[in-house]
Length: 197
Length: 197
Image 1 (cartoon, rainbow over the protein chains, first blue to last red):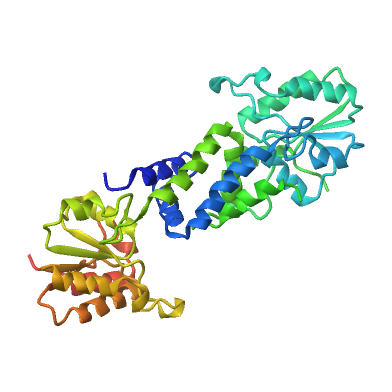
Image 2: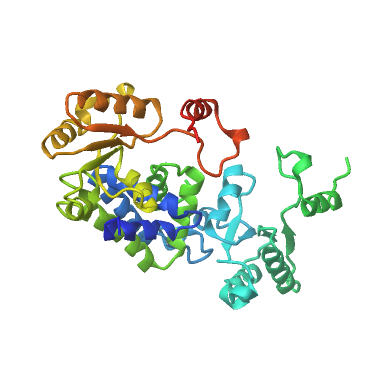
């Protein structure tokens, strides 16, 4: 064993993060030890502080430090709700400024192979909110994976009785992409959804 | 502000690590918050534990939890010393098993533009050890950047008086590489250093 045990443990912790392989984990751990101790303390404390303070909003499950997140508070009159898989998925909507309504974080998408069924998501609360709060449009802002699509289909079906508009994000060619490198399924969706002008 | 302050702070801490851009930092921070709290606590503690326990060996500056590292203890009779820039640089030597001698971590390489002169490195202790401990060979295991090369040249010059063999690692084509993609300077070194057989 070349590395001290506490350094090995730190490397193992970094390796457990998504997209961080063994080599990167080692580089990060050594980097932390090569900086002044105060910086390691600050990093360590910021993890604990975030873990202790950040929790899902009790209405929409977006990460917040309060009981109810600022979006639910500030937009309490909004009549549209955008359904996303995870809290960070609201960022592109908010950054683009295109949407001023409410959000609802499912906490995942249907994935029978991983044992994630409808009961593991927050679907019952979503349906109840849509039906009791006079929501006029439910935007399904889920990813275009098979899991995302089947989750969107299920929610669409569960809302069939309610008189609420249901929509999903357009599929197509992303901005700035070279047509040559567009994959077959994206091309299929972009062609089928072509817009007359 | 969309993200809670403590989450923003955690993203900033991750962003301060080498090779971690803003997007990756955000993904890692959200990942930590989506796992059970115990895992965040364990990660936080492992940083603090490593920062508190790991320190440079008092003889060679390799990271260790003891006063003197296991390599200095186990190989106290060795008469070769391999000079490296930073503690993690000993790993490829140890993994390959090619070397059974001592190490010496400089703590950097000469970099006048960043204000790193000879006095900021541990060169005086290195020279003293080589001269008083009967060292027979100093292997300069420094990188092939201009800074690494000039640091190797300086140490070579400072040891000119001492009757000690000085060597540096061979430069050439790395194993498994396609000749087509070898850069000009590597090719120059590989050609100049070609071996007759």
